[in-house]
Amino acid sequence: MTRRPLLAAAVLLAGCATSPVAFTNGSAIVVRPEFLGELQNPDERAFVWAHELAHVLRVHGIGAALGADRALMERDADLWGAKTAELYGYDPCAGPRLLRRYRQPERAVALADELG
Image (cartoon, rainbow, N blue to C red):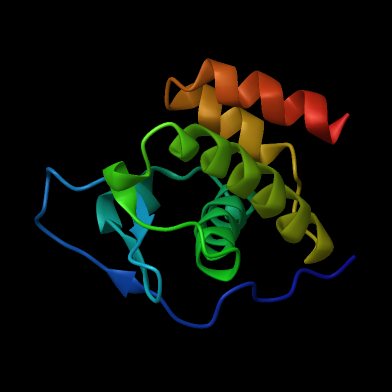
Protein backbone atom coordinates (compact mmCIF):
# COMPACT_ATOMS: atom_id res chain seq x y z
CA MET A 1 0.00 0.00 0.00
CA THR A 2 1.27 3.48 -0.87
CA ARG A 3 1.52 5.94 1.99
CA ARG A 4 -0.45 9.14 1.52
CA PRO A 5 0.04 12.44 3.35
CA LEU A 6 -1.98 12.38 6.56
CA LEU A 7 -2.03 16.04 7.45
CA ALA A 8 -1.35 19.07 5.32
CA ALA A 9 -0.68 21.73 7.96
CA ALA A 10 0.29 22.09 11.59
CA VAL A 11 2.04 24.52 13.90
CA LEU A 12 5.55 23.95 15.22
CA LEU A 13 6.20 25.48 18.62
CA ALA A 14 9.84 26.20 19.45
CA GLY A 15 11.40 27.12 22.75
CA CYS A 16 8.57 26.23 25.11
CA ALA A 17 9.94 23.50 27.34
CA THR A 18 6.90 23.49 29.63
CA SER A 19 4.37 22.66 26.93
CA PRO A 20 3.43 19.08 26.09
CA VAL A 21 5.31 17.57 23.18
CA ALA A 22 2.15 17.65 21.06
CA PHE A 23 -1.31 19.05 21.70
CA THR A 24 -4.24 20.80 20.12
CA ASN A 25 -6.13 23.92 21.10
CA GLY A 26 -9.21 22.66 19.29
CA SER A 27 -8.43 24.19 15.93
CA ALA A 28 -4.66 23.89 15.46
CA ILE A 29 -2.27 21.04 16.13
CA VAL A 30 0.91 22.11 17.90
CA VAL A 31 4.04 19.97 17.98
CA ARG A 32 7.40 20.82 19.49
CA PRO A 33 10.09 20.44 16.79
CA GLU A 34 12.44 18.57 19.12
CA PHE A 35 9.71 15.96 19.61
CA LEU A 36 9.40 15.49 15.85
CA GLY A 37 13.15 14.86 15.80
CA GLU A 38 12.74 12.09 18.37
CA LEU A 39 10.17 10.20 16.32
CA GLN A 40 11.91 7.22 14.79
CA ASN A 41 9.99 6.76 11.54
CA PRO A 42 7.07 7.96 9.39
CA ASP A 43 4.73 5.51 11.16
CA GLU A 44 5.30 7.24 14.50
CA ARG A 45 4.83 10.68 12.92
CA ALA A 46 1.56 9.53 11.34
CA PHE A 47 0.33 8.25 14.71
CA VAL A 48 1.12 11.54 16.47
CA TRP A 49 -0.58 13.69 13.81
CA ALA A 50 -3.61 11.40 13.62
CA HIS A 51 -3.88 11.26 17.43
CA GLU A 52 -3.93 15.06 17.68
CA LEU A 53 -6.29 15.33 14.71
CA ALA A 54 -8.64 12.97 16.54
CA HIS A 55 -8.87 15.44 19.42
CA VAL A 56 -9.90 18.18 16.97
CA LEU A 57 -12.37 16.16 14.91
CA ARG A 58 -13.92 14.39 17.87
CA VAL A 59 -14.23 17.70 19.79
CA HIS A 60 -12.45 16.45 22.88
CA GLY A 61 -11.87 19.78 24.55
CA ILE A 62 -8.69 21.35 25.86
CA GLY A 63 -6.05 20.33 28.41
CA ALA A 64 -6.23 19.85 32.14
CA ALA A 65 -9.76 21.27 32.39
CA LEU A 66 -11.03 17.89 31.24
CA GLY A 67 -10.32 16.19 34.57
CA ALA A 68 -11.26 12.50 34.68
CA ASP A 69 -12.51 12.55 31.10
CA ARG A 70 -9.02 13.29 29.85
CA ALA A 71 -7.86 9.67 30.18
CA LEU A 72 -10.87 8.46 28.19
CA MET A 73 -10.29 11.07 25.52
CA GLU A 74 -6.61 10.14 25.27
CA ARG A 75 -7.49 6.46 24.81
CA ASP A 76 -10.08 7.38 22.17
CA ALA A 77 -7.54 9.56 20.35
CA ASP A 78 -4.94 6.76 20.61
CA LEU A 79 -7.26 4.25 18.93
CA TRP A 80 -8.60 6.72 16.37
CA GLY A 81 -5.05 7.84 15.60
CA ALA A 82 -3.73 4.31 15.08
CA LYS A 83 -6.70 3.30 12.91
CA THR A 84 -6.49 6.50 10.85
CA ALA A 85 -2.76 6.09 10.34
CA GLU A 86 -3.41 2.52 9.18
CA LEU A 87 -5.99 3.73 6.65
CA TYR A 88 -3.28 5.94 5.17
CA GLY A 89 -0.81 3.07 4.85
CA TYR A 90 1.13 3.43 8.10
CA ASP A 91 1.81 0.78 10.74
CA PRO A 92 -0.82 1.11 13.52
CA CYS A 93 1.49 -0.69 15.95
CA ALA A 94 3.76 2.37 15.93
CA GLY A 95 1.32 3.92 18.41
CA PRO A 96 1.82 1.39 21.21
CA ARG A 97 5.59 1.36 20.62
CA LEU A 98 5.75 5.15 20.88
CA LEU A 99 3.58 5.22 24.01
CA ARG A 100 5.84 2.65 25.69
CA ARG A 101 8.92 4.68 24.83
CA TYR A 102 7.32 7.80 26.34
CA ARG A 103 6.49 5.99 29.58
CA GLN A 104 2.80 5.52 28.96
CA PRO A 105 2.62 1.74 29.53
CA GLU A 106 -1.08 1.61 30.45
CA ARG A 107 -2.09 3.44 27.29
CA ALA A 108 0.33 1.31 25.22
CA VAL A 109 -1.19 -1.95 26.53
CA ALA A 110 -4.75 -0.70 26.10
CA LEU A 111 -4.08 0.40 22.51
CA ALA A 112 -2.27 -2.83 21.61
CA ASP A 113 -5.23 -4.81 23.01
CA GLU A 114 -7.70 -2.73 21.01
CA LEU A 115 -5.70 -3.21 17.82
CA GLY A 116 -5.67 -6.96 18.39
